[in-house]
Image 1 (cartoon, one colour):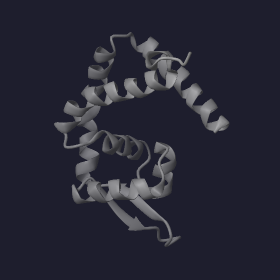
Image 2 (cartoon, helix red, strand yellow; image 1 turned 135 degrees about the vertical axis):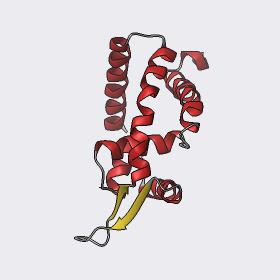
Image 3 (cartoon, helix red, strand yellow; image 1 turned 90 degrees about the vertical axis):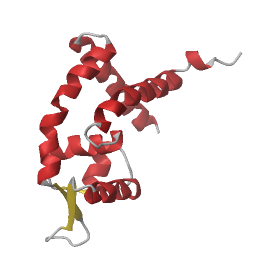
Image 4 (tube, helix red, strand yellow; image 1 turned 45 degrees about the horizontal axis):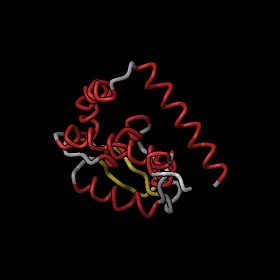
Length: 142
């Protein structure tokens, strides 16, 4: 007998991801960000001036997926893209003042997400670490 949908780990991960994005959506909407844009911003707040390729690797996305996202973010005044002076083939992405200014505004989101999870921060961290380890094993297997 085939496993049912609720028995599948892939569905549990998929549906948890969908639920997490639904929690984030109204919080990010107030800031004018989509969830993928938020992830880009998190990466740039950690290390500004990354290449498009760097961002793609950090997010697990191909450049052809990241580029349209960055174009929309540039139109919103969040980032600026420019050719790397040392290697014209590379496009660097830098935060604008507006993009940098959003960092302080996203700080309260963490508390909202922890509350929505209904778990102590230590349990959330443990779950994140286990999911990350699973992701890494699946990447190696794939």
